[in-house]
Image 1 (tube, one colour):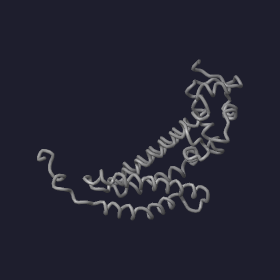
Image 2 (tube, rainbow, N blue to C red):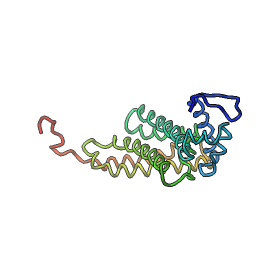
Image 3 (cartoon, rainbow, N blue to C red):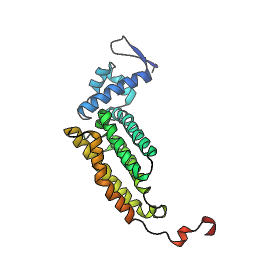
Image 4 (cartoon, rainbow, N blue to C red):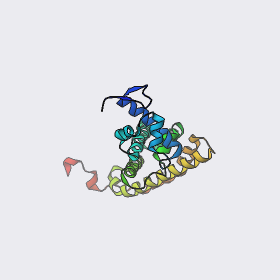
Length: 225
């Protein structure tokens, strides 16, 4: 297909890459406003000023179009949280700063949140796997902050518990974000602080309970073993 693409009204020709971005922006806004299930490829094509066959040629089907929108939103969210965690002064601050960044992102780009956590998309298939992948990557970031509080020689032993708690914490974050977006009962920063103040003492207490003194074998230098 020619790299230059003509719109349905015949008045505008754009390079394919630019047209794809335009379509993604329009689809992203529609999906965020109405949800995956309610949006049709016909309305996206009409709003973007392209033919339906062209829309299918670019993205294949509605599920793949949604996935392309979700990937942009997901990568932006992950980048925001990762940046906050990496910039934290230490392990204790990393979880707190990561949660604050998560809520700040949701507040700053509510459409991205709605696309990422839309409850109307299919529960199986390629799209569901992509959603699960983003959730797992977020769980991994949470687990990273918790494992950093555990002595290195105990981390393997603590890994299962840390993963379980990380899933629970992500679930709590999602639920609180949904409540806050629905009610507007408090500023997003206050919602983040509420969650941090609730879970941080318990997480720190669990980290302390996981401390087991290293065995003599674990304290030996590699050359001495």
